[in-house]
Structures are given as C-alpha cells and as structure tokens.
Amino acid sequence: MKAGIVIISLVSSFFCYGQNLVPNPSFEKYYECPTTYSQVGSKNIAPGWSSPTLGTPDLFNRCSIGTASVPRNWAGVSRAYDGWGYAGIYVWIERIDYREYLQARLKSPLQMGRKYWVEFYFRLSAYSKYSIDRIGVLLSDSTAKADNDLILTLTPSFNHIMDSAFNKGTGIWNRVHFEYVAKGGEQYITLGNFSTNDETKKYFIPNPLNNQPLLKKAAYFYIDDVAVIPLPDSVQIKTDSLSITEATVKTNEAYTLKHIRFSHDSYELLPSSFAELDRLVIIMQNNPLWNVELSGHTDDQGTDAYNLQLSQSRATSVGEYLVQKGINNGRIHIYGFGKKYPVIESTNEDARSINRRVEAKFMDNKRKQ
Image (cartoon, rainbow, N blue to C red; front, side, top):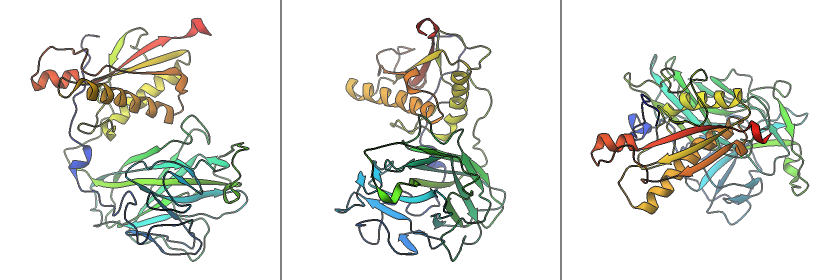
C-alpha cells in the first residue's frame, strides 16, 4: 500500500442532503399501465410528467403485457436503471427535425443563488439504428411550450455532449450530472435534444437482426431516475486535492482512490466521486498501453458472501464509469476481495472506514502489443 495516500470512507447517501424536487423521478407511477408506444399527442405521460410539445414520449413498465414492457419492448431490451419503469423519447431522426421532450414541474421553485445537484440517466435503445452524441437539460421558470413537434428553440441549462456519437458506453445507462446555481424561480425541468440535426453528431449502427421500422432512421433514448437536489451551503463537490496525477502515478503499484464514495451499503457511486474518476479517465487516455486492475474491499461487517459480492459490484461501478467515458472495457479488470485483505486489523469505525476502499493498479501492456 502506497504510504501517505488518503483512503476512502463510506458515507450515507448524497441524496439524504435534500429532498428530490422531481415528482415521480423514476416513472414508477402511471395513470394506466402502458400497452404500446404513444400514438397521439397526449400531454400527460405519467403522474408529474408531460410533453411540452406535440411530440409523443413513451412510458415503459414491467406491468405491461404489450410492447411497452420492461425489460423487452418495441424499442429494445433494457432493465430499468431504478425500479420497474422508464420513459422514452426520440432525440434525432434523419432529415427530420422531429423531437420529443419530457417535462416535469418541480415540487417547489428553485431559490436564487442556491446550488442544486441535477442528474438523470439515459440509454440508447437497442433497436435504434443511430446513436448521437448529446442530450440537454433545461431548468426554467415557465413551461417550455410549443404547438408543434419540432426542436425547442431554447438554450438548455446544460448540454451533455460526448466526445463521439458511438463509444464503449453506447447502449448502457449513462449518467448526466452537474451542479446548478439557481437564477431564482425555476420550477420546470425539461429533458431532450435541443440541438439541430446539423449540430448533432450521429453514427449509423449496422444491425441486420434489428428491423424495427420506427427506429430505422432514428436515435431513441430511454430516460430514468431524474433528480434535482438542493445542496446545503456546507456541501461542495470536490474538484481538487485528488489522490492520483499522471506526474506521480506508476505502474505495478496499488493506489487507493481518494474521494470515491458510495451510497450506504450500496455500489451506487455518489456525485462526489466523479472528479477523481475523471482524473482516472485522463490517466487511461494518456497512457493507451496501460490496463488497470480495479479491486474492491469492504470492512468486517456482514457475511463473507455478501461482502465479496458488494466489493466486486463497487469495483464494477468504477469500471462502468470508465467505459461510459470511452475507455475500452478490455483494458479494465475487475476484482472483489470482500473483507479478506484489511489494511488495519481492527473492528472500530476508524479502521472500518480505512478498510472500505477501491484500489487501482496500472499495468503496462506494451509487451503484449
């Protein structure tokens, strides 16, 4: 173990800091169980959610016995990121400016000058013939409304733009996340692609087994687990004092990743982890001949079998983050050791916080090239 490296401690869920202001954030509630794709311009998609335009977003749920079920439905095959349901929207169609958007009224307006954590998950549907490089978020004081089904000509509060329209993260759940300082009075959140077809990068995905006619010229995103969380003044997302830098990192040494946080008794990464993980991404990008071994470790609490699974799931979450950022999954090796290798042989809380960790070990693969 490298001396002087600060090790992680697990904290309670980031979301306990404040109430999620988004109603029905995971699309679990519905007016009626969906049976197929939406065929008319229904404004009310699900409790708390509507369409601000004449576009027709869709609802999917495990309750369905039709083509709107989860995990298998008319647009593809995907388990929900959270719960049993999710929504779906067209984000791009070849030669057509058709768009679909999801909009919700927040439980209370945002307060001027206050910081909020905003995030949601999106996933390209498996039957989409195209993938694209972006999706946007608009926070506004009034509804973003249009009497057509075209692009909303509004500037999003945040535009999530990836390096390419197709990478190793395409086809899995991706997280959009950012810190937002409220102007005051924002009470609507709107999700979708606010960019024109010319501005949006696209990639054609050849797939002879997929012949869904509704998606042969389109990119279609599933949406799940939307959150707008007020941050107390004392909470800041760390962007400095990271544990590893390209100038100091070496191969064949195990580094405990600093600032990697998980929800309590969970493998869900918390937003405070992303700055360190982004640094890890940069190291992998700048050293294309390196592989990385990610190993998860727990404290002494719980059974051997449970801790082994939890430690591997936590290491896997870190690996999935790298893949979402474009790192080839063949360069990532995942291990879970449970409570087998504690740093400190003790059962007090200080020792347990030290023993709960994810380690990264870089391996030079140039000899195999």
